Image (cartoon, rainbow, N blue to C red; front, side, top):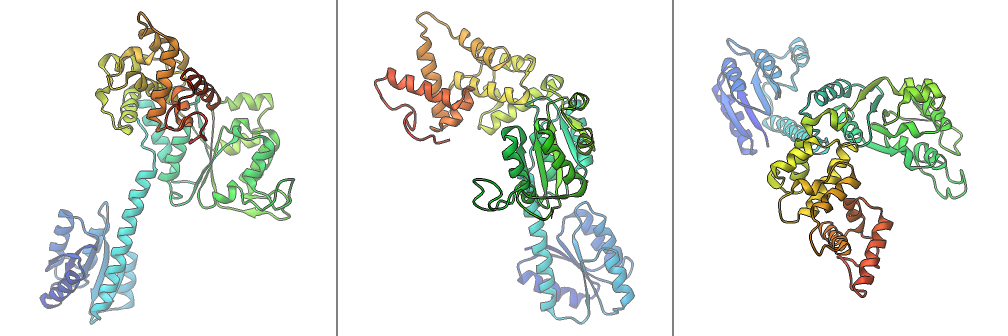
Length: 457
């Protein structure tokens, strides 16, 4: 249902329109003239305005212009007993959503208001969905505010964007932010980790392939470019792409067409490309490892994301955001721990901060996070520093290792892959640790699933 403003200097018609719309469940405010309508628009928010065209003083077009000037303008339906092609054209040019000639059937008005109300509700749902999908980036520092200003500037265009910065600075998050702030927000966002796939697989994943294109191609696959049609393709770690794949991507960026493996014809898609790298592409171009023409196609609009040590004002807000995501208050960290967080070098940037905080929470348990739980900086030093602060007479290394693993498993709900990420170890190492604990406990089940159970991650 909608909040509707009805403006008509004819009391009888205005009253009937108000009653009909109220019976449909709309919240209706009725006013008797154009100036009253303008005053009501400035005082409250409406979804739909139904106004007479000819009124003394401020007419319907004046109400329409006042409505369209609002930050969140309502849809406007104009009513008139003096219809003409000129007035209809003028109304539509001024932004009217609809135009009714008196006398009209009330069912016709009801239908048009209902359509506009449904449209407004759909827009609100889309806005709420986009708000949930768009990453909420922390930008307290001047350096990060400049990054977001540049990203906002390019988001509304289709220009190729190259994101530069160290590993863990949040390039993937910024790429998503640009996508959901732009006109392609309703389209797909497809992320490809170029370094995670060998060249032979990357080409097929990007461009797709036909059935029988190579051994093992038992059915046709569309590929990531086709999947991103109408949206954004994010090529993470683009600096790792081989020269052969660079040539094919260059052709796509130039012509917006590509040829799937095993196909005889070209395919075209409407895709915006955002890429990211932690490599020095200028040096790669000079050394011949990266094609110059491909680099220029990617580098239409470059944004460098500063390292965390260059934006120390963001460290504590990021930590508070991470705590909030786990349902924990900021005062879970002692004042000394917050100072330690702010002063640590964070060579691994935001990703390292997240991992260090996760480990600190495991070590702290139900208590507060102290500086000793955070260690000194890099993951290995953080673990060593935290454990050193816990050394007491009778300390047993195996017991501490077992307690950490069991605590991580409990926090991850038995998900071994997630527990391994918390502890900063590989899944293979996690299984080895679980097996050693099981052996030390005479085969008793460990964690929620036991080391012999299938990986729940």
